Image 1 (cartoon, rainbow, N blue to C red):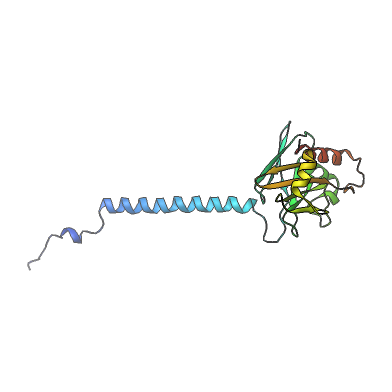
Image 2: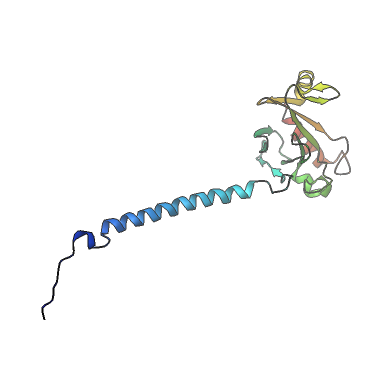
Length: 190
């Protein structure tokens, strides 16, 4: 019995070492890209607003000399000077050009001052509008800026105005926490 043994041609050898290394590199590259995209998406969902029309309260960073109120919906950073208040905001769901302002310290002490409260009034409101938009009583944002530059600021084509609430969310306008938060908010414009 004679066996016919023939040598395989190069096209019949299967995968070579080079092809296996290339396949492994492609799999590793796709894994790395997938991890990067997943990690970025995961980080983005932790800071984004919920699916409802209201934004979650956003806090600010605070150090011993000043803090920054970053209003992500408006893309602005507002620096304030106060060592006793850590400002936070909530953009009004019915008016995207108004943000309720409070501090984490005040909200912890008085639930009505918390932005999680449905009746939240905070310490005041930050409004924004184009210079030609009407702010109140027929006056434009630009007219308010011209009359009272210490309580307004112009940034990126908008005028921002802070107005303290006449009623106290803490029950007493003389409350030290409320005074600290209000002075921090006012210092944005100084």
